[in-house]
Length: 383
Image (cartoon, rainbow, N blue to C red):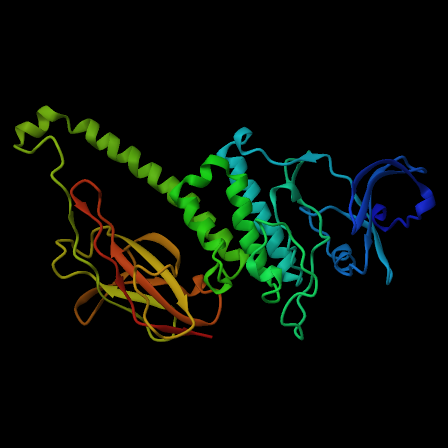
C-alpha cells in the first residue's frame, strides 16, 4: 500500500467544491485537499457503517480507494477516491469490451463475497467505466456482512427493480441477493445483446425468485459467461466450415451423384451407452453406441452437461439444473471388457458438496447427421 493511502485527513483540511447528493441518510460532497489540491469524495453517513472499515483494509483494482474511514455511534465519514468515469453504454462498446466489463464485475463481486461483504445495491449507476478502461464498483452504503444470529436483515435497503424479494425482510440476504441484482444489471448493461438466447438463459437463472434456484456463487455466473463466449466462437467456426463445405458441394456436383440439392432432414446419431462415474475419482465414462457406425479410432466429438442436486433424485433433461456444459473430442478412450470406453474428468467442475450428474451426447456434423440424444449418468457424491 502506497504512502498516499495512509494520509490522515481532517475536515478542516478540505474545501467543499460542490454537493453531489443529499438524502435523509447521507450527504456526499466533492472536496479538495487544501494542502495538495487533490480532489476526493467525502461521504457523511448516518449510523455505523463498519463495512467501510473492512473495505479500507481490502483494496482491489476495481474498487475506489478508501483513504480515511471514521466510524462513531452517530455517523460514518468516508474519504474515497474521486473517479472520473461514466456509466457504461452498451451501444458504444464492442463485444470484447462488454465481455471484459462483465468479467470484471463478476471478479470484484467474487472478491467481496470472499471477504463476507454483500453489496446489496448492484445496478448500472453503481458501475463506472474509469479512464483506465476498467470498471469501478461504487457506493457501499447498503452493504452488509451476514450475521449468523439473524433470520432477516435489520435494515431494508436497496433499489426497487434490482433488489431480490429476500432483501425486503423475507430473509437475511447473502451473496445470492447480489447475484439477482447482477442478473438485472447484466440485462441493462448488455443492451440489445441481452435478448440473445445465450445471455437470456444466464440472466433468467440469476433472477430466479427462489434463491436456491439461482446460481449459488458469482464464480458460477462467470464460468457460465465464459462458456457462452467459447460456444459463440466454436459455433462461428463451425458455421464457416459448413459454408466452405457447401461452397464446394455445388448443385451440379450433387446432381451428378444423384443427391438432392436441398436437405431432407438429418438423422440423429445413436446415443452413448451406459454413462457412469468411474468409482470415486470424479471421472465420467461411457461406451460408444454399438450401432453408431463410428469406430473408436475416429475423432468422435461429444457434448456434455453437468448438474448438482441436494438429493440423489435423478434429474431430467428438461429441468433447469444443468449449469455447466461444454464439448470435447473423444480421443481419451480405452477398451473395457472389449468395448471402446471414453472418459472425461469432471472433478475440476465441481463447485460445492452434493450429488452430481452428467449427461452426454455424440455431436453430429450438421451435414450428414445430427446430435444424438443426451443420456444421463448415475449419481456421484462429492464432499
